[in-house]
Image 1: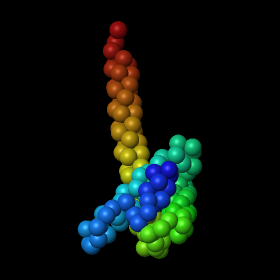
Image 2: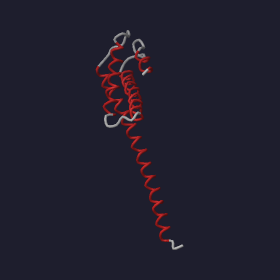
Image 3: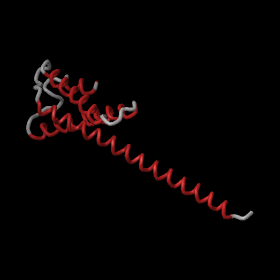
Image 4: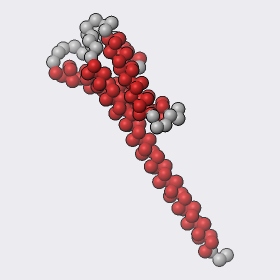
Length: 134
């Protein structure tokens, strides 16, 4: 959040020049920075035990910060707040949430497969003991 605040405090934006390339880089920057924020917020909510509503909380928290960031730009010379930037920020935060979700689901599948394999080995060892007449 500090990085976002510092970047949005730059007069006239961080990049110099004009044109489509600058526009694209600025919008990609919004997307990536808020994607990271969404990732961090989602991971924090996951680690704190929030379930079921984690997606909505991630979106609400990141959207509120995006709006406050755009309002902050009213005070910075050469900066113009836009609803379009808020939409890009929210889209980035959703992608950040999805990355955490995918990583967690992947980890759960691996853990589940490992537990299943251990249970099968344990079961096979028990059957082998039962069949051994000694």
